[in-house]
Amino acid sequence: MKVAVIGTGYVGLVQAACLADLNNEVVAIDNDSKKIKKLKQGIMPIYEAGLEDLVTRNVTEGRLKFQTEINQINGSEAIFICVGTPPEPNGKPNLDYVENVAKQIGDNLKHYAVIVEKSTVPVRTADWMKLILRNKLASSDFDIAVNPEFLREGTAVKDFYNPDRIVIGTDSEKAVGILTKLYKPLNSQFLHTDMESAELIKHGSNAFLAMKISYANLISRLCEKTGADIQTVMKGIGLDKRIGEDFFKAGIGYGGFCFPKDLGAFVSVLEEYDIDASLLKSVAKINEDQVQYFAGKIVEKLGNPEKYYSLEGKKIAILGLAFKPGTDDMRLAPSIPLIEQLKSYNASISAYDPKAIENAKKIDSLKDIYFAKDSYDAIKNSNAVVIATEWPEFSKLDLSKIKEHTNYIFDGRNIFSPERMKALKFNYYSIGRKPA
Ligand code: UGA
Image (cartoon, rainbow, N blue to C red; front, side, top):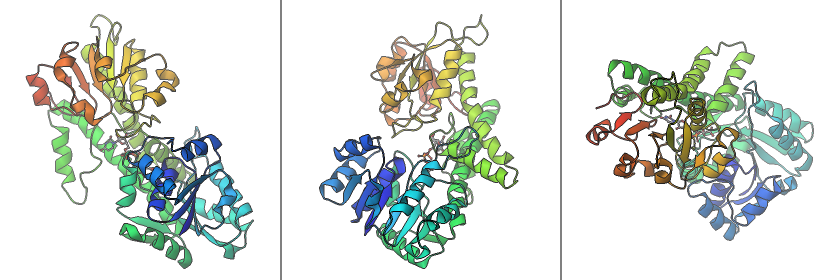
């Protein structure tokens, strides 16, 4: 099938490459000519496991093309809109890119196609897009469908091939037929809905997952005060099939461009319809507090006893900057407020991340920290090691080398076992677990 994907960000690029790999003829369109030029040379704008190989193979074999002109949509049966919806200061998503693309499709489309909303947008956006398109095209020339994505950064390619469900929201049988044919090779469960329900499934899923994480983080604080163990507690809760164990890992909070942004957007949607959103506001508040709570723990244990809340003269090694392992994405990473807070206590910071250093260097509040070439370089002469992202290589560190510099480990992602830390005589502090 001929398919067009508009927007080559985290969602669009994975969608385009994977659909090409399913033997479709895909054109990926982006108005950022520099990005398209690089993609044509096989240079990826993001790090995502397996993506580079997938793109290169499908370009070489002629199924995937990159273009800058929107008129390249012509010939495609399905057109996926995958442009960004960045948050405004009031939490509402900016829909300018979605609107512009809808207008450009209306100006350029010369035949029938199903236009698919893939970007995460507030409920009823597809309906609004339909009006924009109807002003420009005859209603027989297009259908609209909402097909939310549930890909996680770092495992996006794997997630594409193994979806828990494929949601297709549309009132058109023809559109259902086209999209079902396109996704059939994935052998997944299909859920056909109206457009509004599909839009709400996306926002509702992300808000629920964020809620699970904040719930675990909230309970972790009580564990620390009562001697209970967060991992045991969340396992015990999650073993109830109605609840489930996933997304119950306590840590320094969720980050990235999806949960914080989508939660904020969902709150503004609820409030627009005069629905009390305090449940979700609390989820966001627990998340923001969690990182401050962890920074507070560091200053309390390591701080200068003569000076109130001061880390003056202390060097702290931060291991992990990306918002999660497997990605170079620094957007809304919890490491940023953590470092800012530690700096406000006058700590000096050295930091290392296997993939995200280049993106971290672009963040104003991180500009004055030392970016190390590896973990051991970061740890050199430090007074404490802080784990901020659970990259697998950190759990394999030679702890005797850490010992040469410091006895303090603050583990924001619970990657080490308290028993091992006790045996090695570290002052070890983690999340929701008592020291052994
Ligand atoms: C999330 C959703 O998981 C995807 O289904 C969705 O498609 C995507 O947002 C999106 O809307 O585009 P993503 O943000 O890539 O995916 O990453 P997650 O794996 O969900 O992790 C989000 C954050 O939660 C990370 O900072 C992670 O460290 C944190 N997290 C996750 C926890 O603190 N505890 C957990 O148990 C799980």
